[in-house]
Image (cartoon, rainbow, N blue to C red; front, side, top):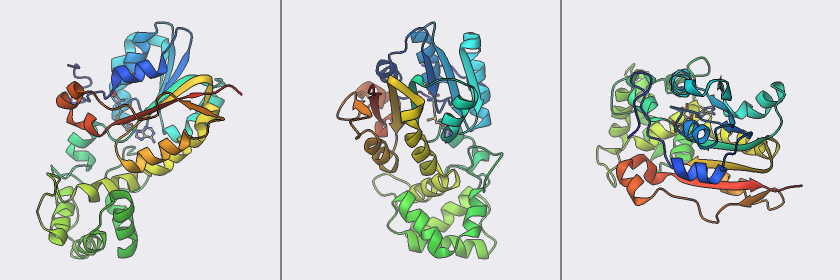
Length: 299
Ligand SMILES: C[S@@+](CC[C@H](N)C(=O)[O-])C[C@H]1O[C@@H](n2cnc3c(N)ncnc32)[C@H](O)[C@@H]1O
């Protein structure tokens, strides 16, 4: 059981030992945690190699605070950056750091982001329609909805939520907006239910895909991933390892594609690494996790 961090910040790290096995951190090595969150992978890597250094990124201020507290005991071995992983190459260059020995990215959202109603990412509790991971920048979900035409909103819900009923849903969301009945997460859920009914399909709430789509769009999650994947060959030194954990096919597909180039990458396993039965039983979120790792081949 992991201990709670900054009050209210509790995230169970997924595939923790598997990430350490993939990166094999060594004393003197420099590593990047692109998504430090509560600091679970970061801590495991720093513990595994007492002389290793780590640069950790997160775009969420609360994750930065929580991980600073958890990783404080590692002192100067760790640098925590409040920023996007899409900027990792520029950050390392401006810090005059050479390519690193390994990088982990544990994509998507953390449990505290979902559990904190004020973030507006969950349909389970009432909160503002915000959904931004970094509240310093960008449009909120409500601003995004208000800016998009119905067809554009339907495309977002279809493409990023893989939701077949996207047109109907987008129309109902816009009707709610025009009637001044779209301010909170529960208003959004109600609009989706008006469009498709309350039935849970396969145990999944009818609003799940719409919320996922809007969150991915608000945070430009796939653009960030594309930028990170393009930067990996520069960021990782020959012999170093990149390990990415994805939670849905929109993330997993580009990760899989990025490692296909055999001149650049040697995959550590052909199939993605999945959570063990024990982990899946203890942490339902781990059931959809896929870890793909590859070693940067020498030129
Ligand atoms: C699944 S959590 C990471 C949990 C962490 N590995 C742990 O064990 O505690 C994902 C984290 O990635 C962050 N994140 C998502 N997209 C990001 C991006 N483009 N740049 C930086 N951080 C990002 C989120 O804010 C969130 O804190």
